Image (cartoon, rainbow, N blue to C red; front, top):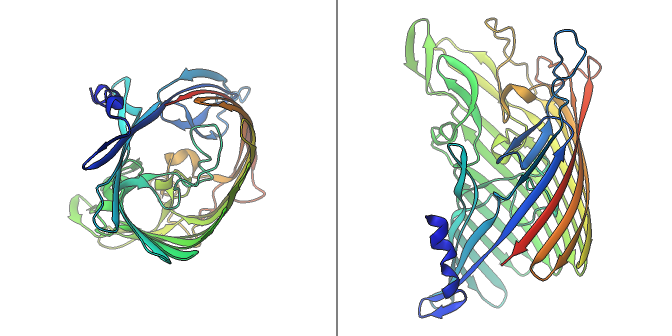
Length: 425
């Protein structure tokens, strides 16, 4: 129903009114993908993250995760509306509403909200300021993503999230800042399922119960084709509001805080595009990265103490061309652990670590990706082919949540081929 309403709007496309103008845009996008082994994916399998660890059968003769698959889907086709105006003196107003078919309803993919915000912008001779309110890309994601063909857009090596926020950006000449308050919706942290069930689940409750929004602060430089940013993302979670003490359930207040500094730089000019980001990531599961937090101790009132896990995560992307465009993406992640010993739960003989993908990746030591691609682009039509090799090294978890570097390390690799056919309107 909502899709029919949106698709009926081209009759007013780019129409000027006394309230501004409306532009309808979008694309039909088809993916044909091949994977050489089972991988952790979302959005119907198109959003490819990393390969699962080995899973051997009873006599250790076969790795049950070494299974190839092929799929063809168009569910990430997109439609959106841009609205500009009216102006309020020197303040310009605009808005955006955008969706695709990556949501889930029973066994069907349904229209889901991607972006929905209003924007106010004021410009003077030497400065400009912008205020955005609504759902947009996380400041660590932004519209400065690498040019890979795969839908994951570089994740988990690139932060990836769209989230409700209030964001202010101001520039004085080439130098500026970005400040944002953010809340979770579609992209969430993991935490305990219940007071008496430590199973890892994803939920907005862990962020909302902390009462504190996520905060991002960035200092920017922008001049011509160059852009650079130094920033920090700060977050607080409340994993549980109740704890089981004996047979009695009682209220507790738990908290885990994280700080993630980042450096980003890009050059986009002419036929060239070069982009680089690095993070010292703490508990960035809500950014589609494989970094969470762990339990470090238990208090007398039943509450738990926590520490964020850390990892270094970086990517480099270079592309050249227009009609014929070649691209190379490189990504790397290294687990650094929690910095303090985790609590060994005698009931399970292991640790409680909460992260994206649950227990599948708590023993991930490192990961890397190499993804070259080539595309043909003419008018409204794009055709591309990408090869993506993603390798993960798994090991034995140490007490501090890092990996014993020389104990049972093993590497698995997924080889993915992705054929993209896209029609833009």
